[in-house]
Figure 1 (cartoon, rainbow, N blue to C red):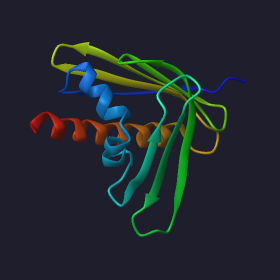
Figure 2: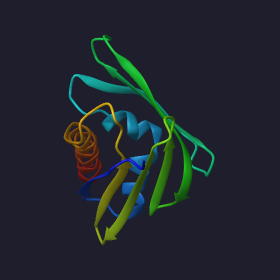
Figure 3: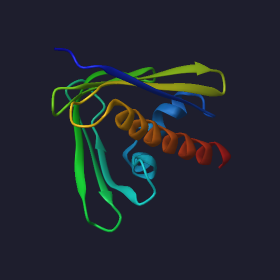
Figure 4: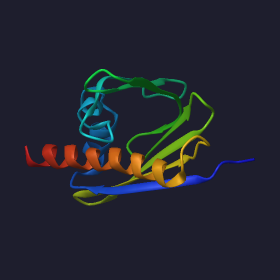
Length: 141
């Protein structure tokens, strides 16, 4: 049975090419890829090609818990779309739509069965909101 799809979105104050870079560059990913402030992303790697790997380490800052978020890119259409096949077989697709100096970034992903839909949506939206905050910092610099 196909899983439910969940969509989260944000608008960032960057042109599409820069929004893509902040989203895909490992040194940028470590600045925003966590849902709450007592977590962080100490390491990330991207191989931006079909068949390339995406890896991000997510950990509680106190060291009490952590996990690796990994997937294989099945679509890389810079700077417009990126699709990951996650390790558990689910899919995540992120699109970038330019509106001049701003970019709408939208991720649609397959829900998993362990956590509620609301919890998953809230967690992914929190991460995307951190991405927006990082994009705002980049835009201001």
